[in-house]
Image 1: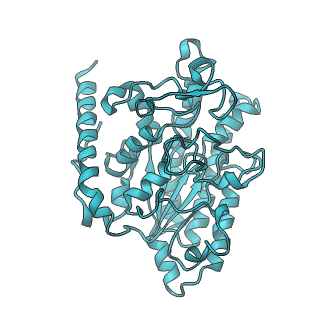
Image 2: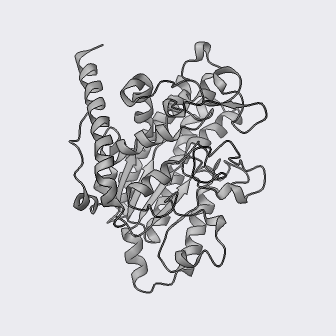
Image 3: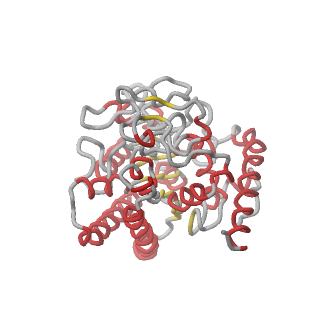
Amino acid sequence: MSNRAVISLLALATFLFSIATLSLATEAVELTRHLVPSIYVFGDSIVDVGNNNFLPPPAPRAKSPYGIDSPASITGRFTNGYNIADLVARRLGFMKSAFASPPAYLSLTPETSHDLLRCRVGVSYASGGSGILSTTGIGTLTLQKQVMLFYKTKSRMSCGWKLNYLLSKSLFLISAGGNDFSAFSERGMAKEDALAYINSMVSTYVKYINALYKMGARRLGILDVPAIGCTPGARVPMMNGVCNDAANSMAQIFNKLLRVEVPRAVKTSMPGMKYSIRSTYNVLIDLINKPFVAGLREVERACCGSGTLNAEAMCSMPNTTYCMDRDEYMFWDKLHPTQAMYERGVMAIFYGSKKYADPINFAGLIPSMNDTMTPPDVYSI
């Protein structure tokens, strides 16, 4: 290992240790107030907080034992406990309820939607299995549908002149793209079609971001596509269970193009938009390479499932089992990380270097965070 690599790992270890200290020191402060008026969530199963519970098949549902470590028994989250949306919300001071996240849009009734329509809370439109492209995730709330639902929501919100001001200060969180690559593979599309497919994904993504901008979004947190070739499910057909480099390559091409097209669109047609693109990909790869840095023991095998790498069946299928030491696993099921992994990732995107969130990290995206806490020194790897 090179000296540079050793220094990088030591920096990461120091950083994660300081983050743990910071988390304890600032939790009391964050309980005192919300650092943004509301959070609006869009995307896929990484941030779905239960919309799919209200959709008929073939939309996937996170049945028991999903949510086994949650305050409630059936949560609709595709992990064992909190997901990224929950942890981001808690970091921003929304900690009065068990989950902190804004509620799932489809869970709202005329009675429970009152606070949303009075501009007191945000909402989540995210749907597990959905994609950027409307052809991905049949039966789910596609990203297009989610943006349309936000338009419908805004048209019904009644807080007068404050509406656009409150939206401009709120956080819009999006996680999308991974399922589009699954669809590409499932349809048996040719490798030579990959670049055109990715271009279509990015251009469509930017179109929806621009639509949200026109409806008032000014603070945007984007989660890029993770190392999809390193999930337990992607490893199963590979010799010796290694990562699928071809799948990871497609994710990297998408992530690089996203970082070209989003700044370009912001500069030309979205003045005043502040954004941070979180590198889910880099966080995952770094912790796979050196899991001990973050206290993880198992990075290849799923905690919940069955068969090779416990990843030949989804977690809630018959005859599946789950591990007891979930805090030591990177992956909960064949596709989704554990709460423990999400916790480490959220800390990195809030306080890490540009390797983990650029052009600014999430703390920089929320200026009021600087008024309530002092983050550890930013490091670079």
